[in-house]
Amino acid sequence: MEIVTKLLRESYLDYPQLCECYGALSAEALWKELEEARMHWRLNETLLGKSGYLCMTPYVLQRRCELLALLNQLQLSYPRVKGMTMEVVSLRLQAIDLDAYPLLASQLRMPQGDLLLLLFCLSLLPQDARTLCLLWKDLVLPAAPLRETALFMDEDAAAKRWKRPDQTYLFLHFLSQLELNFKECLLLLKRDCGDHLRMSGEQLQHRYPLLSQRQIAFFVSHRGRDEYYSIQDYMRFADVCYETARQAMEQLAAQHWYRRRKIGKRFYYTAMVGQSDGVL
Image 1 (cartoon, helix red, strand yellow):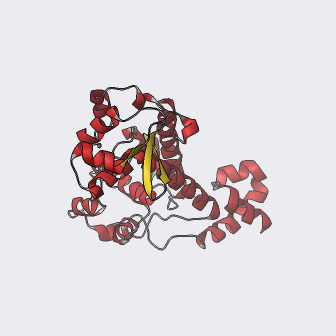
Image 2 (image 1 turned 90 degrees about the vertical axis):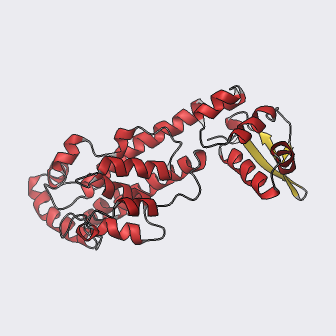
């Protein structure tokens, strides 16, 4: 039982891997124990009809949390469009019988569904998987330079998807695929650190299309080192109300172009020039 507990916490081995680690004789009995233990972590909802299940063991939950943390970093670094929600995905799925995909249906019903589980379920759909995965990307990480291929199951994995009922192996493979792409995006962000201070307004607009022309124009003329800018400065520059100016400056801060600091009762913003200023 101690070995099974360790396996649940540290890995998700299949039978051949278990034989390799513990020998064929020990593996047979161990495998039965492990399979029984995994069933306690099995999700109620299946992926397709009554088949295809996921076991959220401690190890799988840990991997999922690691990927959600990376996803959160990317969302902070590449702000999403406000007002766009997963309801858009639900509308696109109206032609599909969601009763045949219980786990997908449950994620769409939840106000705060698991974005990774949702993407995984979308990638397994027999039709429109590519379109729906790209829609997920447009809603969740619209500005992040993700490779599209990382959002879908690769051909080898897709060919094996329904050969065994336990789809946890496929889910872990999918998480590893996403992890590589997420880390590439964060690495690119570090490498580009400080480029925003040198680029022209036209270049910034091309690279950051989610920011408005007024935001870009304000930043280009207000990015002096050791200079502090206020929300009132943006109000005067763009001729907008306080709330609009505050949101604009917060978006620029979320992009890691400004660092926000409270002085007295007011917030001030200063251009961020490198990782020492807190850039990811």
